[in-house]
Image (cartoon, one colour):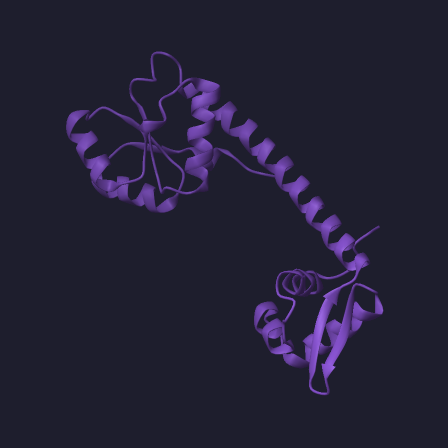
Length: 186
């Protein structure tokens, strides 16, 4: 089965799947289109056999995903997950290739990471632990921790992954390298 519908239609299917009592107004707000557009999109999804409308009262309806709608939504979600994992695997391999020459035994003592406590930091900590046997507590996200570290160890090599961290370190006159500047995801 091939999912031949638009992202807005997929958004409607997902919202109805999670909110069986959805109104057209709620769908309109969720998808970010007018009520008239929602009406057209719902009619298109009904025609495709992906949703069913049950009229509860003259002015009240309930939307349901049909078995075909559920299968189509699952197929599209599965495809998205596969693409995301493939991209993550490529990204992880590129990051490993960039870190490998930096994390030599001689340089490990001077390398620290600084940036926000985000999904990249989580990936970085996991990768450092599994591929490099590098302590994850050397990934800092708080400026106070960075300031304390710089007082103790002035000759560090800091690696960053976002612009705000780069700007902060630059304002402090601290040498650093943004490791994402070398990575591009296809």
